[in-house]
Image (tube, rainbow, N blue to C red):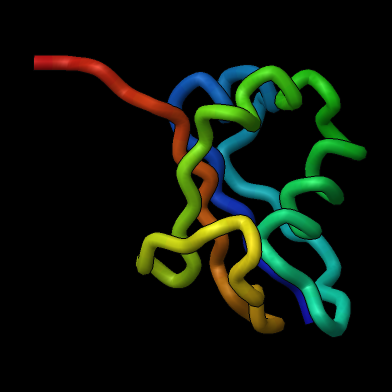
Length: 81
């Protein structure tokens, strides 16, 4: 099974895509999926310190498990008014 990673705003712009499918491994966490994404898109590394995460539309921490078939959103800070 895979994990669907959704990218938003500046992170999507840097990657050149808004959606990535990555293989899911047993014991995956938000951090391990993120690191696998960084192997494919190293240009995203600068955004990591400020990213927020959500698993299946629920906010998550880097240590939270990511189940097979889940959707992981990587959300950079946004501004607006």
